[in-house]
Amino acid sequence: MTKTIISCAITGAVHTPSMSPHLPCTPEEIARQSIDAANAGAAIIHLHARNPADGRPSPSADVYMQFLPRIAEQTDAVINITTGGSVTMSLQDRLEGALRASPEMASLNMGSLNFAMFRMAEKPRQWKHEWEVPYLQATEDGIFRNTFRDIRYILENLGQTHGTRFEFECYDIGHLYNLAYFVEIGLVKPPFLIQSVFGVMGGIGADPENVFLMKQTADRLFGKDYVWSLFAAGKQQMPFVTMGAVMGANVRVGLEDSLFIGRGKLAESNAEQVGKIRQILGELSLEVASPDEARTMLGLKGRANVRF
Ligand code: KMH
Ligand code: ZN
Image 1: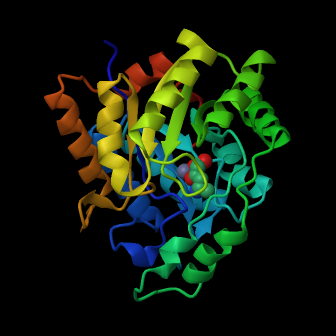
Image 2: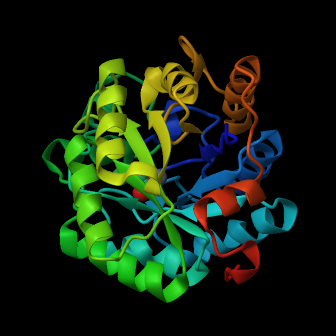
């Protein structure tokens, strides 16, 4: 049995500051929580940036550079920078941080989808910032665009040019077939990481049957060429990563995907979620991969070859 890679998605661009006091928004908070998550066992840290003033998702490479060096100084974790950004950003905006930082890894979303967050605005709460509700409501009429040309652009300009390798985020079965095209034309080379995403409104639902469907499809298309990971958004987060681990998958947790540690209980940090899945893995006699073991499993360029 290979060891299990724990990824942690620290802040994302889905949840907004008013949803949890524990969601890291400033560079200091993002750096602190990333370091703690790595120390708790996360081998890969997936990062977005936010405007320090109001927590709004930000494409700014300058903001990324306020926390990336601090994380790199204090951990040996693999840094994975989003190319998804937020659904309101242009492709160039979405790539600004990764093109400046030249990370070992970046996310790459394998198809367009309705990435709907508008239902989160329906919950009555004290909203701290005027941007939050409109940002969420706008997703009722938004498309998270990832055309074949967009994907090729990222593979060529970040993958080939920078040697960055990808967390291929697949929100539905069709996204696996999109990935198969890029494997066929030689732009994606094994061993590649497929991150199966469940429970995003607009993507495949968080039903256990769908985990088997995604795995069977990936096995049929890619055989031994891929490394499998999964996560589920929201309350299904822990059950899904537990089920996936039993099936031999790597796992992703983090406040980007769920704000909770249990039924109705907000997680107090990313590290708390990492600690919980690490305990579950231990109960299953599954060993956790170190950052360097993850680098070997995924063919990464090494932390000396980044620009932060
Ligand atoms: N923020 C979502 C629109 C990624 O990091 O590439 C998608 C996302 C995936 O966060
Ligand atoms: Zn993300």
